[in-house]
Figure 1 (cartoon, rainbow, N blue to C red):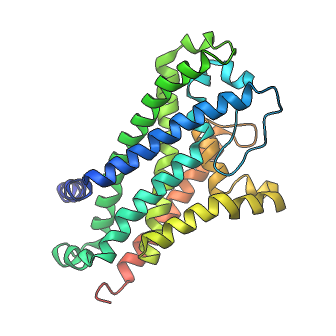
Figure 2: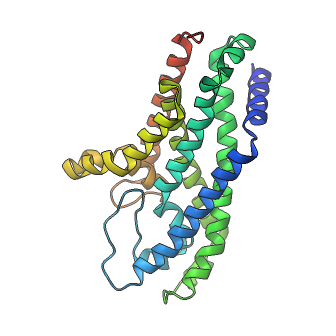
Figure 3: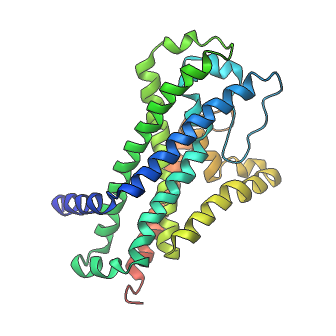
Length: 269
Protein backbone atom coordinates (compact mmCIF):
# COMPACT_ATOMS: atom_id res chain seq x y z
CA UNK A 1 0.00 0.00 0.00
CA UNK A 2 2.83 2.38 0.85
CA UNK A 3 4.35 1.80 -2.57
CA UNK A 4 1.01 2.53 -4.23
CA UNK A 5 0.71 5.81 -2.34
CA UNK A 6 4.26 6.83 -3.24
CA UNK A 7 3.60 6.05 -6.90
CA UNK A 8 0.35 8.05 -6.80
CA UNK A 9 2.15 11.04 -5.26
CA UNK A 10 4.96 10.87 -7.83
CA UNK A 11 2.43 10.74 -10.64
CA UNK A 12 0.60 13.79 -9.29
CA UNK A 13 3.85 15.70 -8.80
CA UNK A 14 4.74 15.13 -12.45
CA UNK A 15 1.27 16.17 -13.67
CA UNK A 16 1.13 19.29 -11.48
CA UNK A 17 4.65 20.40 -12.37
CA UNK A 18 3.39 22.90 -14.90
CA UNK A 19 5.49 26.03 -15.31
CA UNK A 20 2.58 28.44 -15.67
CA UNK A 21 0.72 27.00 -12.70
CA UNK A 22 3.68 27.09 -10.34
CA UNK A 23 4.88 30.52 -11.42
CA UNK A 24 1.39 31.91 -10.95
CA UNK A 25 1.05 30.42 -7.49
CA UNK A 26 4.51 31.53 -6.39
CA UNK A 27 4.16 34.96 -7.99
CA UNK A 28 0.87 35.78 -6.25
CA UNK A 29 2.29 34.54 -2.94
CA UNK A 30 5.38 36.75 -3.26
CA UNK A 31 3.22 39.72 -4.24
CA UNK A 32 0.96 39.25 -1.23
CA UNK A 33 3.97 38.94 1.12
CA UNK A 34 5.51 42.15 -0.22
CA UNK A 35 2.27 44.15 -0.16
CA UNK A 36 1.22 43.13 3.33
CA UNK A 37 4.55 44.16 4.84
CA UNK A 38 4.51 47.54 3.11
CA UNK A 39 0.88 48.29 3.96
CA UNK A 40 1.14 46.87 7.48
CA UNK A 41 3.97 49.18 8.53
CA UNK A 42 2.36 52.19 6.86
CA UNK A 43 -0.89 51.59 8.71
CA UNK A 44 0.80 51.06 12.06
CA UNK A 45 3.06 54.12 11.78
CA UNK A 46 0.43 56.47 10.33
CA UNK A 47 -0.57 57.69 13.78
CA UNK A 48 -4.17 56.62 13.34
CA UNK A 49 -5.84 53.80 15.22
CA UNK A 50 -5.12 50.39 13.73
CA UNK A 51 -8.24 49.49 11.73
CA UNK A 52 -10.32 46.47 12.59
CA UNK A 53 -9.61 43.31 10.70
CA UNK A 54 -10.80 43.59 7.14
CA UNK A 55 -11.52 40.95 4.52
CA UNK A 56 -8.43 38.81 4.23
CA UNK A 57 -6.24 40.99 6.46
CA UNK A 58 -5.70 41.33 10.21
CA UNK A 59 -3.36 44.19 11.11
CA UNK A 60 -1.03 43.87 14.13
CA UNK A 61 -0.27 46.77 16.47
CA UNK A 62 3.08 48.53 16.86
CA UNK A 63 3.64 46.55 20.07
CA UNK A 64 3.03 43.31 18.19
CA UNK A 65 5.57 44.28 15.53
CA UNK A 66 8.19 45.15 18.16
CA UNK A 67 8.08 41.64 19.64
CA UNK A 68 10.49 38.90 18.45
CA UNK A 69 7.73 37.24 16.42
CA UNK A 70 7.01 40.58 14.74
CA UNK A 71 9.56 39.44 12.16
CA UNK A 72 6.94 37.06 10.75
CA UNK A 73 3.84 39.09 11.66
CA UNK A 74 3.10 39.69 7.99
CA UNK A 75 2.56 35.98 7.43
CA UNK A 76 -0.27 35.86 9.94
CA UNK A 77 -1.65 39.26 8.97
CA UNK A 78 -2.30 38.16 5.39
CA UNK A 79 -3.11 34.53 6.14
CA UNK A 80 -6.46 34.72 4.37
CA UNK A 81 -4.87 36.33 1.31
CA UNK A 82 -2.33 33.52 1.12
CA UNK A 83 -5.13 31.10 1.85
CA UNK A 84 -7.38 32.20 -1.00
CA UNK A 85 -4.46 31.95 -3.43
CA UNK A 86 -3.73 28.42 -2.19
CA UNK A 87 -7.41 27.45 -2.31
CA UNK A 88 -7.58 28.66 -5.91
CA UNK A 89 -4.62 26.62 -7.11
CA UNK A 90 -5.68 23.45 -5.29
CA UNK A 91 -9.15 23.86 -6.81
CA UNK A 92 -7.67 24.47 -10.25
CA UNK A 93 -5.59 21.29 -10.11
CA UNK A 94 -8.52 19.18 -8.87
CA UNK A 95 -11.12 20.57 -11.28
CA UNK A 96 -8.87 20.28 -14.34
CA UNK A 97 -9.15 16.48 -14.16
CA UNK A 98 -12.90 16.77 -14.66
CA UNK A 99 -12.83 19.59 -17.21
CA UNK A 100 -10.35 17.77 -19.45
CA UNK A 101 -11.89 14.32 -18.98
CA UNK A 102 -8.62 12.99 -17.56
CA UNK A 103 -10.47 11.67 -14.51
CA UNK A 104 -11.93 8.86 -16.66
CA UNK A 105 -8.48 7.66 -17.66
CA UNK A 106 -7.20 7.92 -14.09
CA UNK A 107 -10.08 5.88 -12.69
CA UNK A 108 -9.64 3.26 -15.41
CA UNK A 109 -5.93 2.94 -14.63
CA UNK A 110 -6.41 3.02 -10.85
CA UNK A 111 -9.83 1.76 -9.65
CA UNK A 112 -8.98 2.68 -6.04
CA UNK A 113 -10.38 6.18 -6.15
CA UNK A 114 -9.36 6.94 -2.57
CA UNK A 115 -5.76 6.37 -3.64
CA UNK A 116 -6.09 8.88 -6.48
CA UNK A 117 -7.38 11.55 -4.14
CA UNK A 118 -4.82 10.75 -1.45
CA UNK A 119 -1.97 11.02 -3.95
CA UNK A 120 -3.27 14.36 -5.19
CA UNK A 121 -3.60 15.76 -1.67
CA UNK A 122 -0.12 14.66 -0.63
CA UNK A 123 1.43 16.07 -3.82
CA UNK A 124 -0.30 19.41 -3.31
CA UNK A 125 0.81 19.41 0.34
CA UNK A 126 4.41 19.17 -0.89
CA UNK A 127 3.88 22.04 -3.32
CA UNK A 128 2.26 24.04 -0.49
CA UNK A 129 5.35 23.47 1.64
CA UNK A 130 7.47 24.95 -1.17
CA UNK A 131 5.13 27.93 -1.54
CA UNK A 132 5.16 28.50 2.23
CA UNK A 133 8.95 28.55 2.15
CA UNK A 134 8.92 31.17 -0.59
CA UNK A 135 6.45 33.29 1.42
CA UNK A 136 8.69 33.11 4.51
CA UNK A 137 11.84 33.98 2.56
CA UNK A 138 10.07 36.96 0.97
CA UNK A 139 8.92 38.13 4.40
CA UNK A 140 12.44 37.84 5.82
CA UNK A 141 13.74 40.03 3.00
CA UNK A 142 10.99 42.64 2.89
CA UNK A 143 10.06 43.04 6.57
CA UNK A 144 13.49 44.24 7.82
CA UNK A 145 13.82 46.59 4.84
CA UNK A 146 10.44 48.20 5.48
CA UNK A 147 10.85 48.23 9.26
CA UNK A 148 14.09 50.19 8.95
CA UNK A 149 12.25 53.37 7.97
CA UNK A 150 9.19 52.89 10.15
CA UNK A 151 10.58 54.19 13.42
CA UNK A 152 9.54 51.03 15.27
CA UNK A 153 12.21 49.43 17.45
CA UNK A 154 12.62 45.95 16.01
CA UNK A 155 15.83 45.03 17.81
CA UNK A 156 13.95 42.14 19.44
CA UNK A 157 13.73 40.51 16.02
CA UNK A 158 17.32 39.33 16.48
CA UNK A 159 16.28 37.10 19.40
CA UNK A 160 15.69 33.41 18.65
CA UNK A 161 15.46 33.94 14.91
CA UNK A 162 15.58 30.23 13.95
CA UNK A 163 12.72 29.27 16.27
CA UNK A 164 10.69 32.32 15.29
CA UNK A 165 11.06 31.56 11.59
CA UNK A 166 10.36 27.86 12.11
CA UNK A 167 7.18 28.58 14.06
CA UNK A 168 6.06 31.14 11.48
CA UNK A 169 6.64 28.65 8.67
CA UNK A 170 4.81 25.82 10.44
CA UNK A 171 1.81 27.94 11.42
CA UNK A 172 1.37 29.35 7.90
CA UNK A 173 1.90 25.93 6.32
CA UNK A 174 -0.79 24.32 8.49
CA UNK A 175 -3.25 27.11 7.67
CA UNK A 176 -2.54 26.93 3.93
CA UNK A 177 -2.98 23.16 3.84
CA UNK A 178 -6.45 23.54 5.32
CA UNK A 179 -7.29 26.29 2.82
CA UNK A 180 -6.06 24.08 0.01
CA UNK A 181 -8.11 21.08 1.11
CA UNK A 182 -11.21 23.28 1.31
CA UNK A 183 -10.56 24.33 -2.29
CA UNK A 184 -9.99 20.76 -3.41
CA UNK A 185 -13.25 19.61 -1.79
CA UNK A 186 -15.17 22.43 -3.47
CA UNK A 187 -13.65 21.52 -6.83
CA UNK A 188 -14.45 17.82 -6.45
CA UNK A 189 -18.06 18.58 -5.52
CA UNK A 190 -18.66 21.21 -8.23
CA UNK A 191 -16.23 19.86 -10.88
CA UNK A 192 -15.50 23.49 -11.72
CA UNK A 193 -12.46 25.56 -10.80
CA UNK A 194 -14.36 28.79 -11.51
CA UNK A 195 -17.18 27.93 -9.10
CA UNK A 196 -14.82 26.67 -6.40
CA UNK A 197 -12.65 29.79 -6.58
CA UNK A 198 -15.68 32.10 -6.68
CA UNK A 199 -17.14 30.43 -3.60
CA UNK A 200 -13.81 30.68 -1.76
CA UNK A 201 -13.19 34.35 -2.59
CA UNK A 202 -16.81 35.32 -2.01
CA UNK A 203 -16.80 33.58 1.34
CA UNK A 204 -13.70 35.41 2.57
CA UNK A 205 -14.74 38.84 1.26
CA UNK A 206 -18.46 38.78 2.01
CA UNK A 207 -20.05 35.81 3.76
CA UNK A 208 -17.79 35.46 6.79
CA UNK A 209 -17.73 39.22 7.38
CA UNK A 210 -21.54 39.29 7.45
CA UNK A 211 -21.73 36.31 9.81
CA UNK A 212 -19.13 37.85 12.12
CA UNK A 213 -21.11 41.10 12.24
CA UNK A 214 -24.31 39.22 13.07
CA UNK A 215 -22.89 36.63 15.49
CA UNK A 216 -19.33 37.37 16.56
CA UNK A 217 -19.02 34.29 18.80
CA UNK A 218 -19.84 31.97 15.91
CA UNK A 219 -17.84 34.04 13.43
CA UNK A 220 -14.64 33.65 15.44
CA UNK A 221 -14.74 29.91 14.76
CA UNK A 222 -15.49 30.03 11.06
CA UNK A 223 -12.75 28.89 8.63
CA UNK A 224 -11.34 32.34 7.78
CA UNK A 225 -11.01 33.49 11.40
CA UNK A 226 -9.84 30.08 12.59
CA UNK A 227 -7.11 29.78 9.98
CA UNK A 228 -5.95 33.36 10.53
CA UNK A 229 -5.58 32.56 14.24
CA UNK A 230 -3.72 29.37 13.33
CA UNK A 231 -1.30 31.25 11.06
CA UNK A 232 -0.71 33.82 13.81
CA UNK A 233 0.06 31.14 16.38
CA UNK A 234 -3.14 31.99 18.24
CA UNK A 235 -4.62 35.38 19.11
CA UNK A 236 -6.73 37.06 21.77
CA UNK A 237 -9.90 35.50 20.41
CA UNK A 238 -8.81 31.94 19.66
CA UNK A 239 -5.92 30.07 21.24
CA UNK A 240 -3.43 28.18 19.11
CA UNK A 241 -4.65 24.82 20.39
CA UNK A 242 -8.29 25.64 19.60
CA UNK A 243 -7.38 26.95 16.15
CA UNK A 244 -5.33 23.82 15.43
CA UNK A 245 -8.16 21.54 16.56
CA UNK A 246 -10.75 23.39 14.49
CA UNK A 247 -8.42 23.41 11.49
CA UNK A 248 -8.01 19.64 11.81
CA UNK A 249 -11.79 19.25 12.01
CA UNK A 250 -12.32 21.32 8.85
CA UNK A 251 -9.65 19.22 7.13
CA UNK A 252 -11.17 15.86 8.06
CA UNK A 253 -14.68 16.93 7.10
CA UNK A 254 -13.52 18.31 3.74
CA UNK A 255 -11.49 15.21 2.90
CA UNK A 256 -14.40 13.01 3.94
CA UNK A 257 -16.81 14.89 1.66
CA UNK A 258 -14.38 14.77 -1.26
CA UNK A 259 -13.75 11.04 -0.81
CA UNK A 260 -17.47 10.20 -0.61
CA UNK A 261 -18.34 12.30 -3.66
CA UNK A 262 -15.48 10.88 -5.72
CA UNK A 263 -16.32 7.30 -4.69
CA UNK A 264 -20.06 7.54 -5.44
CA UNK A 265 -19.99 9.72 -8.54
CA UNK A 266 -20.48 8.23 -11.99
CA UNK A 267 -17.25 9.31 -13.68
CA UNK A 268 -18.62 8.53 -17.13
CA UNK A 269 -21.17 11.38 -17.04
